Image 1 (tube, rainbow, N blue to C red):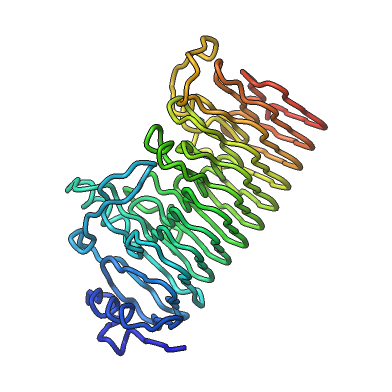
Image 2 (tube, rainbow, N blue to C red):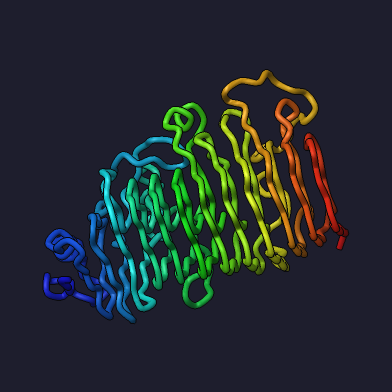
Length: 401
């Protein structure tokens, strides 16, 4: 297998020189099953496009840093937040055509999208939606391991229409920099978004997020139903979450979400373990989702409950609504979502904000078969239940703290 060191193509690791052309040339000339090496140093770059059957390898001390110029990230057509729309390109991308076997690997090297700077520019220009740090699309066979991904203008790692994905030993930071200082001016900074993907394993990762730590999605409303690609067969295990809003299902889920397992994870000063969100207009389903052997301790008083985030364990059919009528049903049609077969087993949660447990379905589409087993949860508000059919609770203790 061939190795292509970006230094041999003219890249300069001084943190100042923009090396986009040199790095892209190394990628373009990489043979099948070859490796492009980013050595120690800080290499500033605009948007880069990976290709099939290649490995991007970041050595110890390597830092791939996003350019501080929005013009280095072309505006392109991307699905984002469930809709096809114009977006700024990400730091690492695929071009949307079908790809196979892409690996991002390393010895703890850093992918830093320079999001605080680019966020401000992209929001001011408004030529498209903000870019991500890494956005891989339509790829069969993705492996991302042993790297750090930081500071995206929007979502940090976005996997879209991918199959057979492994994310292992990865750190993702969208809230704080290496020195513990909060990134300024970034919002909607999800850690990882698994979007209309199949057969995904996320394990042994650390995520400190400004928003959802991991969100499982599959398109928005009529457009998402038309595309019709579910997120399914997903396992998230042995991960540590240090801030943000836990592991979410939805709210973009119009292609369907099913067969998701979140297990053996810890949540520290995260707002929630679980947020299951399927609102009117989406249609389709969130089905067969399991949260098992997870614990949360949230002592962060800087973030309170809002219309977006209700509590430590929550299922919410009125996500984002400040006021809503949970008693009056609307007509059922293809835009009416279904939430069913959601399991919370061997869970402990202690939070300073919101409900310990919040479960609310639609009046016209009750959430069905919700199981809580061996759950011990405490919060400023205990438990809210509305529009739930077949709620099964075994050895559940919910207290007010």
